[in-house]
Image 1 (cartoon, rainbow, N blue to C red):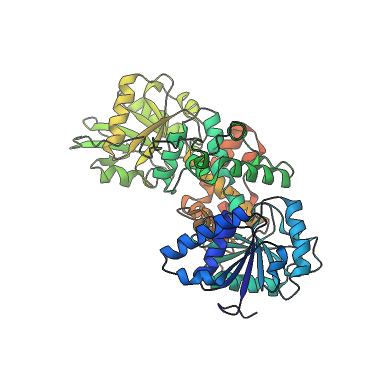
Image 2: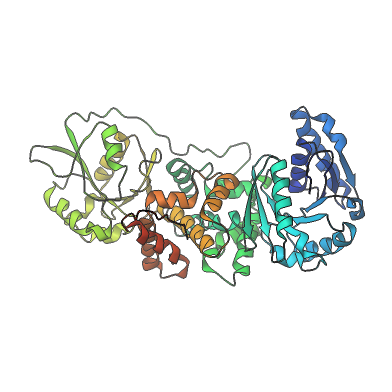
Length: 531
C-alpha cells in the first residue's frame, strides 16, 4: 500500500483525548482525516483541541484536511480506520462489525485498545487478517511510540502497512504479540504495584517513594505522581484487566488503596485530588531539600568492604573527599563503614568483623538489597549503630534510602545524616523492608520484562525501546538488568520471595539463565542471543 499525504485517508472513531490526538498527529503530517463521534459535543471539543494545536504549530491551513462525521458510514472510503473508543469489548466489537461492511478491503482496520485482546475484537469481522492493534500513547500527537499489535490472524501485509503508516506519522513502531497489556502496560505494572504495596505496608510515604524513584533512579515522574496524571481510575482498570485476563496472576493483583481512591472519587489531577492535592497549593516535588554542610574530611577514612554490590560506592566517597580503605590502622580517623557485599559473599562475616574491630561510635552501613536490616542486626554486638542502605542506586542520583536499627539512638541517627550529607546525598529514612524501595521496584520491572521475552511478546531490544519511548524510562529494563547484573536481580527477587513466600516474586527462569550465562567464560565465535 502506498502511504503518503494527499493519497491516504485516515478515519478515526472517537473524538476524545486519544482520538483527537491521533487525528492531530495525522494532520501535522498533512494526511486527510475523517473524525467520527456520535456525540456532537465530543466533536466540538475535539475540534477546539485540534485547531488550538495546529495554530501553535503554524499549520492552520491543515484544518481543511479534517472532516467531522456524525455517522459511522461517513468513514467509507478511508484507507485506514483507527478506533479509539472506550475500553469496552462489546462496544468495540459492535463498531468493527459495522466497519467491516462500511470499509471493505483493502482498507485496514486498527484498534487503539490498551488492555483488551485484539484477537477478540477482530473475531467479529469477516476479514480478521486486516485487523490489527495500533496503540498510541497519550498525548498521541507528542509521544513517539506506537505498539503495533499482531492479532492471531493479522497478515504480514497488514503489519507492514501499519508500521509504514506509523513511520509516516513520525512515530517509532514496535511490533508486539497480542498478550494482555502488550509491552508497555504489562511491563510497567510493577512500577505502580510495588509502590502501592510499599505505601500500604507503611515503608515510606507517597512523597518519599516518588522522591526516591525520581531522584534516585532518574524516572521523570514517581509512581504516585504518574498515577495522578494518568487517572487513578484508568490505572486501576488497566491493573484489573491484566489480573482478569491472566486468570489471577499475582504480579498484577490490584491494591486496596487503588480501589479505595476510585470509590472516593479521588482520581488524580483531572478532579483536583488523588495521591496529591491539586488546588491552589501545588504538589511540591522538592519535599526533601538538600542542604550542603561544610564538613572537613581532611585525613578522614571511609571504610568500604570488599564486595561486588556497591560498584559506585567507592567513587561516591572519593568524590566527596574521603580516603577509602578496606582495613584501617589504629590511628585512622574513621568517619563510617559501608559494607557492600552480597549474602553469598559472606556479608555476615564482613559485618561481624567490622563490628568487632570498630569503635561503637562509628556508623556501620550495611547493604540491605538481599537481606533485611532486622536480620543484619542479629549479627552485631552494637546494633544501635547499624543502618541499612541501598547500594545499587547510590551513584544514580542525589538521594539515598536508609533504614535505621530499631535500637538506634538519636545521636547516631544525626551522625549518619551528617555522614550521608557529606557525600552529597540526601538521606531518606524509610522503614525496614525486603529489598528496600528502588531495588524492589526496578528488579520487578526487569523481571516482568524477562517474562515478556520468555513468553514471546517481543525481543529484548524491542521491549527496552518501548519502555524508553512509551513511558520515558531512563533505561530499558533489560539493559538496566544487565548493568546491575542479572545475578543481583535474581538475588533481590529471591530475597523478596523468601520474605513474602508469594508467587508474585518468583524470578523468571530466563533471568536465572542470563545470570548463569554472565558467569560463563567468553567463548570465541559465539554471541548471546538474549533468549
